[in-house]
Image 1 (cartoon, rainbow, N blue to C red):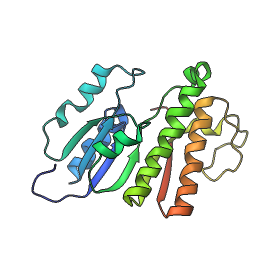
Image 2 (image 1 turned 60 degrees about the horizontal axis):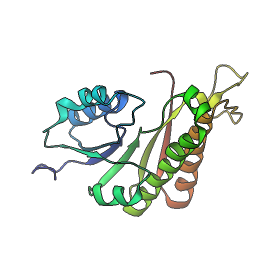
Image 3 (image 1 turned 60 degrees about the vertical axis):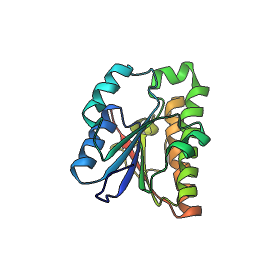
Image 4 (image 1 turned 90 degrees about the vertical axis):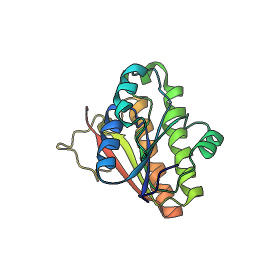
Length: 188
């Protein structure tokens, strides 16, 4: 539980990663309470992720939860805050590895995103920020690329999972009033 001062609560998935840990730092500086969820996927060394979050350990406004977003019951039992926003940065990363193991990418990146959108729906969380990828543009002769470009030609399973996440967000926004924002990161 967070201590005395009431702060708006933000849930950050993948919060032990490079982007996530920097976001958590800024959220704390701006007086938010943060719940960080990470499953320590071995794509990046656990030691690196632990170094990313070491300065937050013991902070009264940060709660760390080791959990898998594919396990809905685990999410419901461990994520007990009154979150105003979900920032969903967690994903199975890497274009090339997705070609070798597309099913795992589909499970983690699509089903995991849908599980979190369902969590948002159940908990009445009305803001969802999703980490998409520039890889959704794929082979696209329209340059410079535009966010509203309807022609997306992904060329990897990873890219297709990111488009799927964006489309799921659109559906949940339309049906359940969740404000969904997708950020298409380029190489970070």
